[in-house]
Length: 377
Image 1 (cartoon, one colour):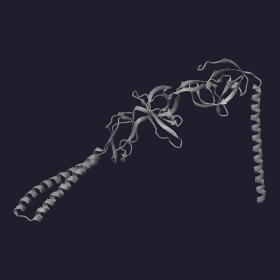
Image 2 (spheres, helix red, strand yellow; image 1 turned 180 degrees about the vertical axis):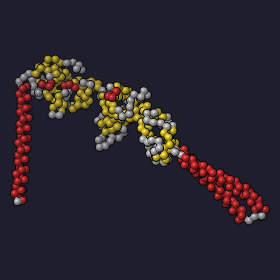
Image 3 (cartoon, one colour; image 1 turned 90 degrees about the vertical axis):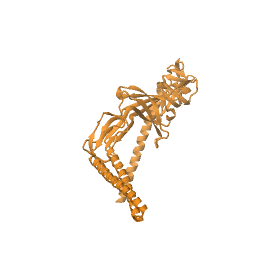
Image 4 (cartoon, one colour; image 1 turned 120 degrees about the horizontal axis):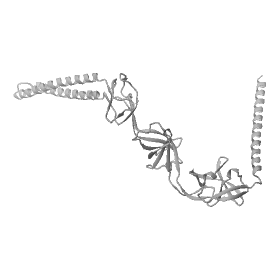
């Protein structure tokens, strides 16, 4: 029975392999036939084209990056002590100043502890004052020989002990007063309340956020740059930021941060463009498009971007050689603003087909109807 099952499985595998081979052969045959048909259409036909010489030109790469807007500063504001929230002094959307009290924790217990500690300190001061007076009297009696050295030393020890107790009491008062002061929740930075997490009456533990406050006067457009573009980004360079949500409105900014190290494994770099938001038009979280001019490429060899033809996933051009054209694969640099920077594959002055290239094939005979002036597209 097992031998029969194995035989059936092997027959099924062979059938699948034969079917796959047949399908692959038909696909190859169809593609080859299509290529031959395309070649037959253009064979023997003279194509009319326009050409332009490859030439040198100063170009400035334009780098376009996707970004999102974030506040220049934002933080969750939380209490330093545990307790129930007694009062909230602000709410979402309101502007607060640095050092402003934005919430308070119920502090009756803290105030009572401070009063108790102060009362203990008053009593200790009174005992210390009495002990010092007694010590002065004991010192006089000891000098006269009226009391023993043991009695005198006992009084000195009592004074020293009360002085230590007073210092401890005063330190405890300072600690409790600090806790009492910490019942007020203060924002360290001016900004706008963007989020309220808790209500009046909620119990908040130390470190639990009550508000989120952000400085929206300056926003930063945070973007990610590829390692092939990072050399074009210059700290302090001007940048243009386009906000689609505001009907494509443009804002001027400055590159204020470029990461010195790549983010692995993507090998990308983070960068920031700062924007003045004094008019409060921009909103945190908006999507943005950052446009930055890179470093100028002087005397770069260029051809019109429209002359490029995609062939086998590579960008090529047709170059005029006699009365025929030759298809060339190019290594390109920056492509934009209507021009393509040629790094290799083409020489200055060679004539490139700029009209009619989409109906031309490698080796086609052509008739040149016009030779465009270099730089005129």
